Image 1 (cartoon, rainbow, N blue to C red):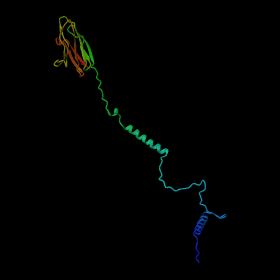
Image 2 (image 1 turned 60 degrees about the vertical axis):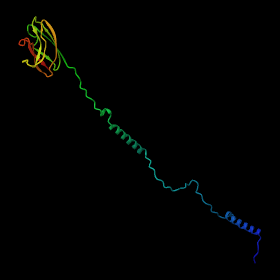
Image 3 (image 1 turned 135 degrees about the horizontal axis):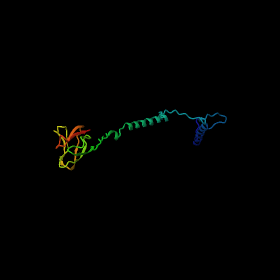
Image 4 (image 1 turned 90 degrees about the horizontal axis):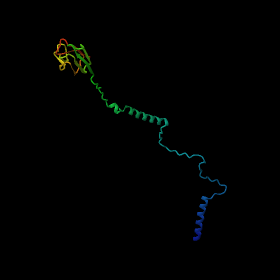
Length: 196
């Protein structure tokens, strides 16, 4: 036989069923073992496996080696780089020496020179201070390549004594023995003109 329930009764029954389910799920009867989720003990690290790409950090020695190598390369570059002084050739200056000078005091007396040898440096600027002491007699001073007197090096003006004059000329640049004389009295007045 089917009995009819009242709506209030249905509601009460439904509440009862729900309450019983809640109690069964959340309530614990005393003395009953309940397994709680376990947490890791305090102080125990949780290890999580992570794959990381290793990063190489140079050691102090490696860093020093890199710095030293870089410094050495820089120094090598600085050493091999030519300086302006090395690449620019310095001009060699040829010393300009003033030509040497020679002064000769020469006199004529009694139709003769006071010397029969005159010596001067090669290429020298020669000054001859000539003193003609012979009264009313003309003399001069002349230099030739040899005693033939065919090629002159210097021929001075003739002066009549008593008188003085100064002759200037440049000696030959080639060393050797040349010839000097008075052109008015070539046999009596002559000598060796030596260039050293």
